[in-house]
Image (cartoon, rainbow, N blue to C red; front, side):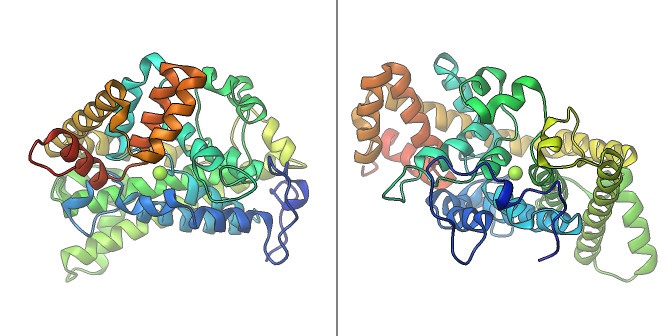
Length: 383
Ligand code: MG
């Protein structure tokens, strides 16, 4: 492994794990975190959770799992080039979407609405809840007992109200400071990954067209280069070549702009990084604008496409109906969530019931949520 920069995260300056454990004999602490994430149930469920397209719409679309792998690949490349901790960036990237509900953002909005009287629902906070308490894999502790740095990176945003309940980990959302550079990288790698793969998926679904995309500078620049250099190339390969080059342009810009910012700030340690008001990892001003332009395009033409909106509306109805049904009649819950429900309701009353119902629903895959809806509401379905 390359020599880590002095301001990188490393096991020697880790804030450690909640439950102390002996150091791993042949892996670094962050490699152990990554391995625990890969082996957990929530990670496997990402395979059947939607990014933009619902799982049954086709086998070639991204799922949360393939998205997370793409984010990890991008984050690792950037971290390695900047002499930062590649293992930590990878662990954060693989875990960043663990708390996502079925049906992507539609699911998150629906659950947040259902939970409005009980503290709301934030998918980022839910990712932390998955690794801190919902996974049941170890004899000695609940959750995965990850290092502070991985947990810090998973919690990308958080409302001030919820941050207050998180102690040390939530403090930066109150005083408005930054997480490690590795966390900052995972955050932007997420953005680079989804902006580009949504173009690819959107074109495949024919929800957007190349002609529309040519209004976007980032796309048009690469599109012109590719079609001039390879005038005979088939359209699918043109798209892949353009998207590949776009990702490359953004990563190169990100590395160069971040390197310049790090050099100018010259942070002595990770604690200096954490004390700053502004992130050091980021695009140049020009690329930031181009990336925004692309995001706006996708919001307008892809995420608001009537067929996406139809699916979104359906997803909201399914999750809201499940929530109401379980709240009205907790006896409908299968044995495991039912046990948790009884325990948490005793402690916190109706808010406890709502939290367990939400944990259960948030953990579902798209297809499981649809099947559960059928089992509960369709009179001719076997339960
Ligand atoms: Mg993501």
